[in-house]
Image (cartoon, rainbow, N blue to C red; front, top):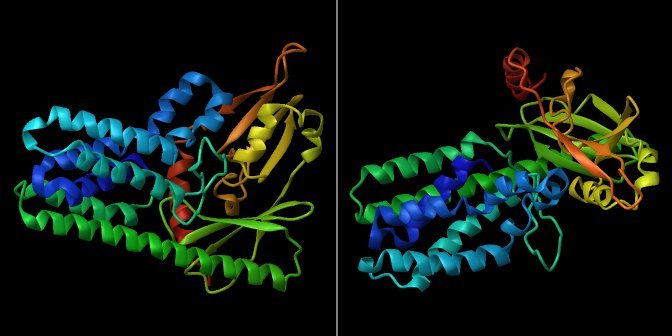
Amino acid sequence: MDTVSHLLLGGAIGQATLGRRIGNKAVAWGATVSLLPDIDVPIGALLGDAAALTFHRGITHSLLFVSIAAVLLGWLASRIHVRDRVDWQNWAVMLWLALLSHLAIDAFTSYGIQLLLPFSDRSFAIASISVIDPLYTLPLLITVVWLLLLKPKRPARTVLAVTGIGLSSLYLAFTLYNKQQVEDVFAATLAQRDIDYQRMFVKPTIFNNVLWRAVVETPEGYLVGFHSRLDDRPPQDFVRFERNAQYLVPHMGEPIVRDLLRVSDGYYQVVERDGELYFHDLRYGQAFEWLRDDRPHVFTYRLIPPRTERSSMDIETISLDVDRERDPQTARELWDRMKGRQ
C-alpha cells in the first residue's frame, strides 16, 4: 500500500494500544515505525536492479524481521521514554502490531510479500485492493486528524482509533467479496466462450475497487480483460499477448531469469527489439489495455547478456516516463470505464 495508508494505520494502532497511557507519543511511534518495512526501497536502489528485484517486499516484509525489530525498538523506546513508565514488553507489542499492519495490508495488494523468509520464499498476494485506494485511506485519515485535535489522554481517542481501524478493515473485507464476484464473472464468461485456460490472475485497477483487470493464461499465451462492477454485461473484449517463451529457453539456467519468472508468478511476455530481449510482467501489463494504445508496460526489464563466460546475465529496470499530456486523458478514460458499459 501507499506510504500515507501505512503511516495512518500505524498511528491509529499506536493510539488503540498505548494512547491512553502516553498520548500522542504512541501515535507518533506507531506511525513512524509502521514505515520501517519499506526500508527495502532505498536499500534496493543501492544493490542494483537484479538484487532489488527480489529484495523488494522480501526479508523486511517477513514475520521474522518485524518480530526482531519490534523487540529492539520496544527496548529503545522504553529507554527514551523512561518517565512514562511503560515497560519494553508493552512497547514491543504496540510496535509489533504497527509493523504487522504494514505486512497485512501489503499482502492484500497484487505485488505480494515473502512473509516466511528466510524459511520459505513463497509470496503471498491476495490482490484484492489497489496499492492506492482512497476509500481505504479515508477513514484512517479522518481518525488520525481527529485524534490530533483531541486532548492527549481522553478515553474517546481510543474508541475513535478502534473505530477507524474497524472501518478500514471492513473495507478490506469488502474488497475480498468484490474480487470473488469478479472472478466468478470472468470464469463464467470464459466457460461460455469455451476458452481453455490454466489459471487466471484478477486485480483491481489503480485508485478504486470497481474496475477489475484479469490476466488469463491459455496454452497459446494470455488474454487480458476488464470488468466493472457497474457493467450491465460480462466482459466482451480481450487483448491477446503472446508469451514468446522460446526467447528464454537458452537462458533458463540464469539465476536472474528464474527470479523474473518467480516474481512475475509466471505471467510474462518476452519481446525482442533491436536484437535485445525485454521481459514484461503481465500481472500489471500496460494497466489500461482496453484503450489499445502503445503505452509501455508498468514493469519491464531489459535482459543484459553475460559479459564473460564466468559472469551471469543481468537486468536493467526500464523506468516509466511521465506523459503529462496523456496521463490526464487516461484518468478520464479510467473514470469513464469505471462507470460501466451498458
